[in-house]
Length: 95
Image (cartoon, rainbow, N blue to C red):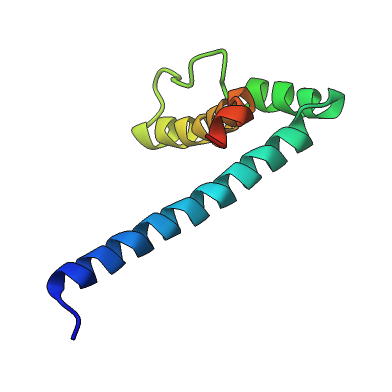
């Protein structure tokens, strides 16, 4: 007969296993982003995305609606996410 404590321990162990699997998948994806974008061609793509999606400038334009601003900020956040991945030290991910 399984006790409540044993069920809780099994659940905790399963949660840890799932967390490790998810981290491994994310780490692999980060490595793939870096492999694809850390090159001359990747640099060109990142520079284009940064210019196109307001990384170095404001996304606010006077007189436009909040929806337009939110749309541009959404575009900007995707590029910022990619830039964040490219700055990650992958050796730290495995620790």
